[in-house]
Length: 291
Image 1 (cartoon, rainbow, N blue to C red):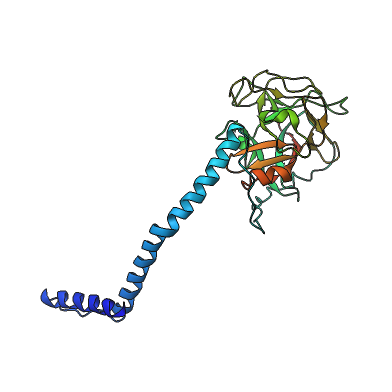
Image 2: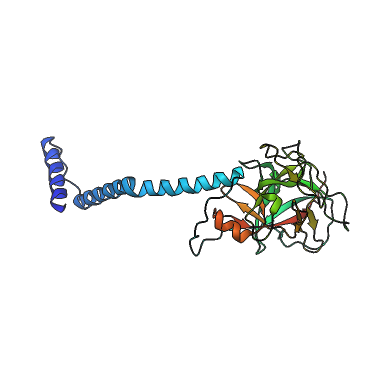
């Protein structure tokens, strides 16, 4: 191989001489040529061997993610690589909205999505993500504003009415059926999509009232929220088809689907769909300005 490279270098020198170019090859040209040839070899190896493997891995992951977005049953579970990295948290803008002072001071506010360690992921966005689910935005400029029926105390579960939602046809923040969402329980890898919905009474299984996903007769629930007046955390009580309930229902964010989900068993869900999702807390951020 080295002899071949030296031959190529000599060939270029001869070409320069034939054209009467009056400058010699710069010092280190042979080394540069060796490096360039090695780089070509590495790139060829990547394109022929490594790249197809990377492509196949991406295709497998995309196929799994597409099934998740469409609400299809999962493929067989795969083992997750140990030591998976946790997504980097966004810097906090001013006061820590994920750990606010206690007390609900306004019936209008935002929904902050927070990591369990109390750092901010973002605010629920006024428009859906790529799969017609609510996603997040880094600031309140494009954040969804929601209203409560009244200030606490509340007699039970509450609705969150979206005031500036892009989807005006489904004005409540709720969840629609994803996969077997009538069975959100420990031991089930079922899930529901967090999206815009129409009203469904509290403690009622999913009803076909219409929702932002607009995929078939996908039923939904809306009056599922409770608000802790000390932490301002919003939690979900999900009612299953058999009228059993799960409180609190785990909430997580999936970057590939760009949306929030509810699930019955987060750890089990991750075995079937290891798509980089992570748990979040929803926190109510009272709006203090003029509407």
